[in-house]
Structure formats: structure tokens, C-alpha cells
Amino acid sequence: MQSYFLAMKAVRVRFAPSPTGALHIGGVRTALYNFLLARQQGGTMILRIEDTDQTRYVPGAEEYIVKALAWVGIKIDEGVGVGGPHAPYRQSERKDIYAKYTQQLIDSGHAYYAFDTEEELEQMRERLKAAGVDQQQYNSITRMQMRNSLTLSEEETKALIDKGTPYVIRLKVPRKEEVRLNDLIRGWVMVHSSQIDDKVLMKSDGMPTYHLANVVDDYLMEISHVIRGEEWLPSAPLHVLLYKFLGWEEAMPKFAHLPLLLKPSGDGKLSKRDADQMGFPIFPLDWVDPNTNERAPGYKESGYLSDALVNFLAFLGWNPGTTQEIFSMEELIKAFSIERIGKAGARFDIQKAQWFNQQYLKARSNETLAEYLLTILKNEGVNCSSETAIKICSIMKERITFPKDIWEQGKFLFFTPTQFDNAVADKKWNNEAVTVLTAYRESISALTAFDATIAKTTLESVTAALGIGTGKILQALRLSITGAGAGPDLMMVMEIVGKEEVVKRLDFALQTLKVKVA
RNA sequence: GGUCCGUUCGUCUAGGGGUUAGGACACCAGAUUUUCAUUCUGGUAACACGGGUUCGAUUCCCGUACGGACUACCA
Figure 1 (cartoon, chains in turn green, orange):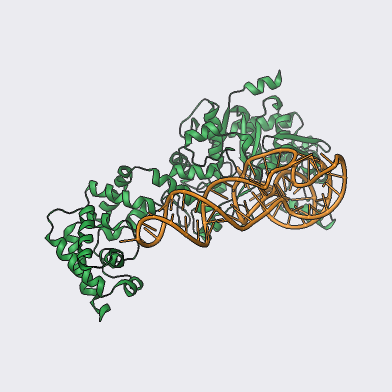
Figure 2 (tube, rainbow, N blue to C red):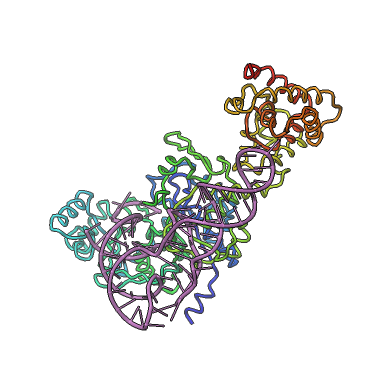
């Protein structure tokens, strides 16, 4: 009956970041998994901002999170930015709610006031450490030696509070109890309550800690599944205890603790530092730290396509069990399942992300890419027809990883080369080449129509007439036209560049490289 | 240190009591491309270790090792 009720419960998931800076790429994956489950089950995706630590608040972070999620295609149904029946969705605006439930815990004997100063806490830890105690915790044993409402009389406690003495409210964790939870990814996890300390629920500034706020909000917002990073697993039993003490055991959400995203070296959580060192972004969008004014690159601005990034991220810790690798968001929604999420941490391999990007880029139409190219060209002050831009994209897109490469690797299409690759020139620039190219220049300048096919047939007839193999001089021709020894189809390049420019470039190359054939 | 979690090619992973342990990225080689890239074909490469259970374990159990997370009035 009970489980039937739970099974039927509408799927409501939340992504609950803290606005302490830009959204980490690991956070994006967590949000994605939540979103996939919500969409698949016809559920609701909620965005809640966990800003209970006023000291760590970073201006602009919340806005960044909203923008970043929108960019990757994670649509928020309810929460910050869109509102909903459980507003407000910013924890700092829900202080009264938490106060009410802390009071309830105190009244039911599951929480207590603690007046210990930082120094006193420090002394306690020192004392325990010196005594060789394994855990220097505020717990069922040590709390009896501290200044709290358990060791003080009711009058003393009241007097202290009335006097305005700073205090926190701590959870009274039972001394001996087996706390268990059935994680959707890891199965049963059991922890003895003696291992859990009397966590602070309400800080001395009147704000709740994560533990309390998270449980209260998940309950009130009717969250069905808590999908979050593995770093929360150790405190999950504490949350289970809270549900129990608050009388919400029946409505407790299911938990799924995701494997961590590891640094490429594999030792530890992926951090901004590692990403910087390895030269890849850690944030979805560019982020300027308001304190240092430092700019951290984003995936978007670095040229990653959002659907490629989503595909890549989805596969870090999850797989469909088939050999299909390319998944659109729609396909991911259909195929996703929590059961197929792995247990072990996944190293972050930027090469794979680049491969996905390349795949998605190739799948883009020339027209779409051309639009993008045209905006770059406009900024660069380069004139180009959209027809030409489409042609350029068609020859460039097979050979690049990022859209910006079309421009960066295709500059020779817009500018006459000013210098030539010496290695190629040394090898391929010889008398034969000069003979052919000189003749070819003459033939082309006499042409009235010009395109890739004509360029090719013209070249073939010139080499045939001279009795020289086309292949022998092609590199020299490429060098003349592009300045380099490698690139896209040469005939198409010449078509794009146009007859006049081809002649001009041949003249310049013949002139400049003359010395090579002394 | 303590608690918890984890461990299949270099990486992401499939698989699961009897398999030639499969795929993808990366890498290497060949083919195509008169270049490079793409594409195609092929190749190198893995069940951490030790005990059980079993006719048989990479798969189940227990240890060990190694790795990670957590251990704040941070989330």
C-alpha cells in the first residue's frame, strides 16, 4: 500500500546549486540527469537556489546558472526564474519556514541549543585528539561536556538566549541506531548513528545549514527523487534521520548518488585548476569572477555545441546499453534510466568531447554554418556572399572540430598568402612546377568562365601538353594558392577565391619563390 | 586516522558462472583522397590481488591492496 503510493508519486526532481560562482560542468551533468528523468516520466524539473551561506554569495552567480542551464537545453519547469506553487525557491527567502521546523525538532526533543564558542569547539577537538579518540565530533558522548541546552538547566538556557548569546541548534543524533538507506545506484547503505555527529541545523545567524534546508524543502516541494553527486552520500544517513524526526519518513524521496567526474589523471574530483592546467573549460559559459575580474572560458565560447556537450556529459557515468553513441536530447530522454548509471567515478576526457563536437558539427547544414561564418566575417570586416559562405562551409566542415575553425583555418580563402610554407617549398617548388604554373596562369587568365571543374580540366590540359604529371606539381600549385601544403580540395578553393585572385596569387608565388630554382 | 563508496583495454564503457570478454575515443597500420583532414578496413590493448563457493569464476562471497568522497556555524 505504502510502496504503491510511492511508486505512483509524481516525479518531481530538483537541481539545487549554491550561487557561489559559475556552475561547474559536473553540476551541469547532475542537472541533466535530473532533467532527463523528469522529462521521461512526465515530471517536473525544479531549480532551487541554496544560498544559505551569506558569506559565500557571489553576485551574478544565480543569473549565470539560469543562463547556463538554458544554453544546454535544460528547461526549468518550476523554481527560481519561473516561479511555482512552492515559491520562494531561494532558500534565503525561506528563513521562517526553517525556523518553524527547527522549533518542531526542539519541541520533540530531537534538537537542542548549543552555545559553544569557536574556541570551545576547538578545545574539544584538541582534547579528543590528545586522548586518541578516532573522531573528534560533537556527538552523543561529547555533547554532555559542552555548553548546550542538554547540560544547562532550562532557566540557564533561557537566560542565555534572552541575553542574546549567540547559539546554534544541533540535531540530537541517537547514540545507538542503525541508519539505512536504499540508494538507487548503490543499493543499501548502512551507517551506525554513532558515526554521525550532532550536525548544526541552524547557524548562529539564523540561517539553516544545507542539511536542514535541503530536507525541509525537498519535503515541502514534494521532491520524489534526489539525484545529486556522490559527495553527498556520507551525509545522506543524516538526512534520513531528519526525515524520520520530522515525521516525514513516508514521503522521503528516493536517493540516487551519482559517481563523480574525475580529473583526467583520475585522482580526485575534477576541479577548475585541473581544467585550466589541461587547457579545457570547466564552465558551460564564460565566467568573469566579480572579485578578481578573471575570465574563465566557457564551453559555449570555446566552440562546443550544446547538443554535443550534452551528449558527451550524458555518457560520463551512464550508457544506454546499446552501441548507439550519438543521442539528441529527445533520444536521451527516451533512453535514460537511473538503473544504467554506473557506480565508479568517470574521468573527464576532453578528447571525447571534441569528437562529439566534430560529429555534431559535421551534421550541421552548410547553411546553418554559413550563417555563423557570416557573422564572424562581418566582425572581421570581410565581405562575402552567403553563397560563397555556404561553399566554404561545405569544404571546411569535414576537417574541423569547432565552428570558429572555419574562419581560423580558412583565412587563406579571404587573404592572399604573404608567405609560403618553407618545407613544402623546398620539396615541391622546382623547374617543372614553375613551368607548369606559368603556363597554367596564362591559360586561366584567358578563360571567360571559371569554376572548380574548369580549373581542373584546364590544369590537366596544361600538364598533358607539357608532358608533366599533374600530381607532381599539385603541391606547388596548392602552395601558390594557399601558402600551405595541406588543405581542402584545391579546385574548390580556386573556385571560391575566383579567377582574378588565382591569377594574382600565381603571379605573386612565381615572383616570390623564384629564388628557389636558382 | 575514522566512516562511506568504488575497481573490465590508456580513457568512457558493454557483459555476466562456461564468451575468441563486445563497442566507442585515443593510438598504430593499410586503403581511398595526386596533400592534410574525412571516410573505410585492420591492429595493439582490460576483468587489481588472494582466498573461498562451484565441475567451472572476470562474473557470487570474504579479505587485501589501491583509488576516491566525506570528516565546518560550506554547500
